[in-house]
Image 1 (spheres, one colour):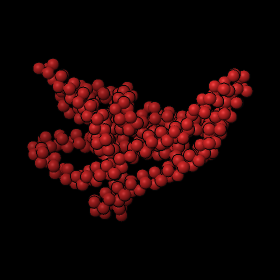
Image 2 (spheres, one colour):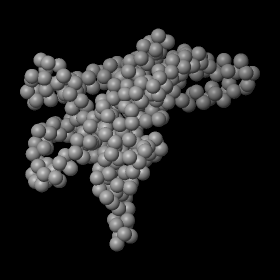
Image 3 (cartoon, helix red, strand yellow):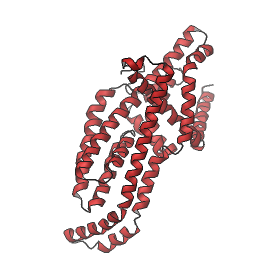
Image 4 (spheres, rainbow, N blue to C red):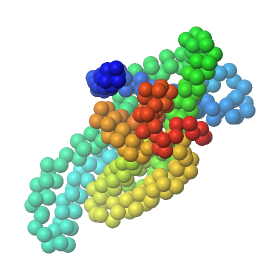
Length: 347
């Protein structure tokens, strides 16, 4: 009997992975819509603390929060598009700077790499590199209409969700148990999304001023890239620092601006990532650091960059759900940070 259960669990896991891979175009927009829904709920909670706004009807508050989020996204995409146009115009200068840098290296180190690097630079298509970088970002908004459609239906379902739970579980004890699980998921994911967005915005704004001070082209684009990549645990901040540093070297044709970007933006990443963020989040997510890294790799393989961005929220949901069933509770304990699933979630 135990072997049969293990086989069933194995088959369910394999089936889930296959469905996630081949139904990515359907599932991924829905997951993104859920995250945006959590963001809207966070915005509503913040706005509800304002006296004159808290008196508004719930549906009007939801509509205002949704429009606020959509307006921010539209503004961000518009600003990024303008910055991309600016970078595209500067591409010939970047390509010319590659030859300048090879000459500097050849003269300083007396190494005959001129021809090798010269041929290599001719084969580099910086426009294609920039396009691939942009496509990674725009891929998150590529199914904007589908995400918006899912989001609208989620918002329409929200007022009736508690009624449906009561109808599904008429027994008071079972209803309370299921409601507690839903509230835990709501609190954990909402808390993570809100605080991670806040710290990423802080990192993006500070990095913008640093890049503006150094004189990097299109600082808004790089600041937004840093903001987005900061949602990827562990390696996101590293990638977000390396990319603008590389383009700083290409822009100026020397290594000093790139080193400045690495030093200043890297320091901002370290301070916020290692000091500010832990103080705000604490241990509220209750996930093992090793599990964060492994799930980052697994979801990255399944869904690419989008999977990396969503890896932590998905893992939190899985831990909370598995902790409620005796058969899967050991797995939840294994995935948790200290093996304690009864910790109260902290704001």
